Image (cartoon, rainbow, N blue to C red; front, side, top):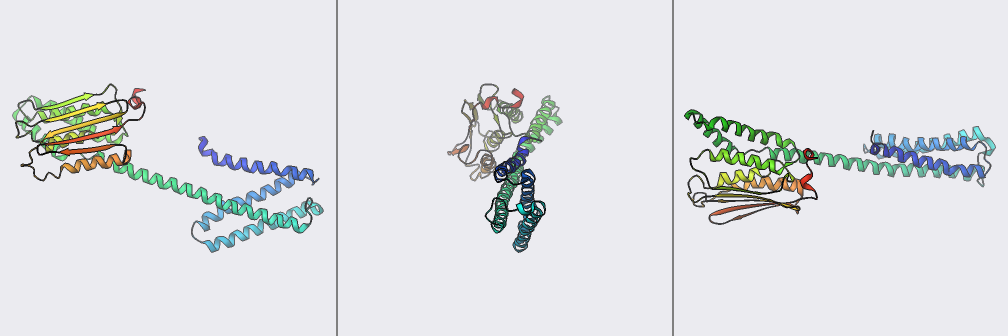
Length: 349
């Protein structure tokens, strides 16, 4: 068992041990007989009182919203343990029961007040412990919900691209084109990454770039002439880690909403730049607003990315900005990098 799990037990043991040691001088200086026995008896009954309230009555009555029953049970426990202590000490020590006190009444009052203090302290300590445990449980639920939401968002593959690729693959296979087998392999690799990488918290950015190249190849194979798609990577190896499937949807967005299919002057420009402190990924594609006057679908994939950034980076650190003109659409993703981010992946250590 790890030390953090032992910490509450060790803390309680230290407090009770200190209390035991603190009482010994009182018994010794007042010439009270059998000081160890009397100190042990008093401490044992305090333990019974404290944990009987904190670990038995509170969970069963107070935390189940039965305050009346809890109050009666605490009074019974307080009175019962106090009476038990006075009875046992009278039987064991007789005339020496109130040694060190002005009178027997003062000693009885001392026992009642001490036991009452233990009940009150136990109540507040247990309430604090319960609230901390509740906060941890709530945080765990929030974390699980956030992780489930992230997995869902990451796993959303653009069906438009997938269907087009499968149609192209079918046409190539019917025509007996030599590119068909390679197309199958590359599509399988891309789908494997899209499905299985989402189970990882982070992946190397250059690994995502490799699959972006696969994506661009699968798009290019539809055309007989090279397309004006430029991918620039300015990232020293091995590069930092990012969330999986963070950049690929931005590239899919360009392919889906660009005008390469019918515009001879159309283009797509992709650029990744990584420094010691930041990662910048920019996409720019030409578009024809006459053909797509209400291209609201642009916002669907981008909203997905923005939501993921809010879940993983908060609202102030990572940004996803867009800019549109009559003929172009630009997306700019900015991620601040923590120190030594480029050496953070376990596989590199």
